[in-house]
Amino acid sequence: MYAYRAYIESILNYSRDALDTHLSAGLFYRDTEAHLENTALDGDNEGFKKRASFVAGSRQFDLLGHVHSDLFFQDKLLAHAEALQLSNAKYAIERVALKIFSIPAGTRLTQQQNLFLGQLPKLIIIGFVDNTAFSGLYNSNPFNFKHYDINYAALVHEGAVIPAKPFTPNFGTSNFVREYLGLVSITGKQLRDSGVVVSREGYAAGYTLFAFDLMPDMEEGDHYNLIKNGNLKAEIRFTQALATNVNMVVFSVFDSVIQVNHARQLMFDYH
Image (cartoon, rainbow, N blue to C red; front, side, top):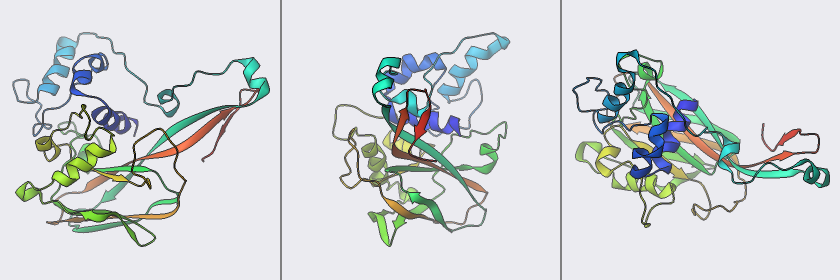
């Protein structure tokens, strides 16, 4: 699960310049669009070839990268002992949670009735990968998020559909720009002089991720929104019945607070 978190956060939060420079210290080289399964050393997957060059001849190499943990993505320093005697140190975090759901072969409609029950996240990103790849098949790529000819994707909360106009892509005719811009928008980079590493063409070629913004103002800022509770359902439809078992990867973000008291005990507002 950690690998999917680190991967999704890397491709959505950083630019191509970042991936080509400091993220390479952790051996993050993005797979070439439409060639994510290509593992030939003379093939077209430039990311794979670059990673393979580091292990050629079983040579040793070093890695250094950022730990993808909730606490390490907030800006406050750890409080000293004197400050903790006066009050608890409070750290506002964006808590990330991942879930996996299996969809059997032959499915044309899947409804996950209890995608989230209780506190609802503020952001959700959903992608789909082959079950065999997820389970570790040696010659497959677990990060190849295929589109599987999805023609409908939406969430339902207390009868309200999210988004109000459900996603209805047509990958057969390359009509998926609304879904692509939805992914860009959730990063907060739309209409700004900044971008994500996923291109329009690449979105349908191994980087198909559906983004759902559950915040009332749909504003990707540092402010808090009122916490919502309830039962959230996901409904996904496919143009053709699935030819293989598929895993649905659900990446979610919650607003949360961690507190540290004078005894260095941690307190959470979630379970």
